Amino acid sequence: MKNQRLKKSRNAMVAIAAIAALALAGCSAQNGGGDKTDAGGKDAKSSFSNVSIVVPADPGGGWDQTGRTMAKVLTEDKIVKTAPVTNVGGAGGTIGLAQLATEKDPATLMVNGLVMVGAIETNASKVRLEDTTPIARLTDEPLVVVVPADSKYKDLKSLVEDIVDKGQAITVTGGSAGGADHILAGLLLDAAGVKSADIPAKLNYTPNAGGGEAVSLILGGKVAAGISGVGEFQQHIEAGKMRALAVSSEKPVEQLPDVPTITDAGYDVVLTNWRGVIAPGDISAADRAELERIVTEMHDSEAWKKELETKGWADAFLTGSELDSFVKQNISDVQGTLKNIGLI
Image: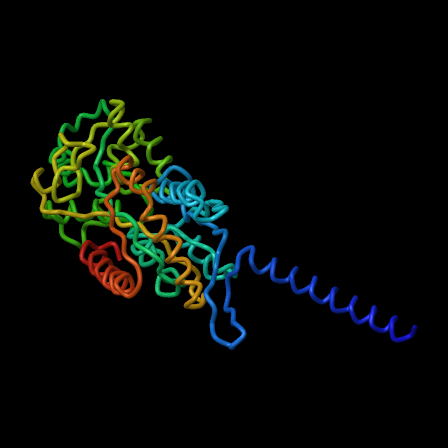
């Protein structure tokens, strides 16, 4: 009788242990980030069923469009179960970047790009792009210089010459300080013959944390001109509320076929704005590989290709060591450009 009770007790303990093990395994499987080992002690692959997307800007701009488009494709194509988007605006993405430095969840993707590279320099950010984990470069987009529909400026030359002549009296708005829009404004003055040392005093540039604010300033006639990605201003141009003066690509863009390039307008300037995603800097190689797999599956989907076409984004997909090399070179190039046009 005693042996039977002992046997039942041992069986119960085994059952409880098995249930506990299954529960722990279930918790890990919900979002299986982090380093894991198999029975042989070898590193196992990471597996994320959910990812968080951080947009380091206010709603309405190119980064916000990118993050929300990613979330839509990732969930609708069932690549992941959920992909909530959080906006952390300010300082060209460097506020969000500082937050990413303390993020403990490896299944986190932050939208970034050329704007952040420049903002890190102009804001003297303590957290740098080199402190993060590059996951993918996604898109490349030309910028467009616009004015309100009723503006006196009919072409780019008249606007630039007025800025050269009147300086601070002419206000230009765009994204964050040191970002692609700001750099383009500086390059235009440089191409117009303004000395590098004089550009900061000559250029009255009003930065914004998101595209929505810039649109309001332009449509409200509060500024003379604006610069942003083609996709951010396209609907307002097509609606006749803004006039596009020039695009910053080598050739005219499909969305705005009648708008000349900046080069055609008389200024030897070409600049495109790349966007991608990064992850926290201390994630494991397995976690990076899993995030790359997720983003690659998204990139290869028909839904993503359709979004690229709709928004006029060029496919600039890049991952791995090639991405690492690109980011390193881009940081060096932007530092040089910002110094040459007097912004740092």
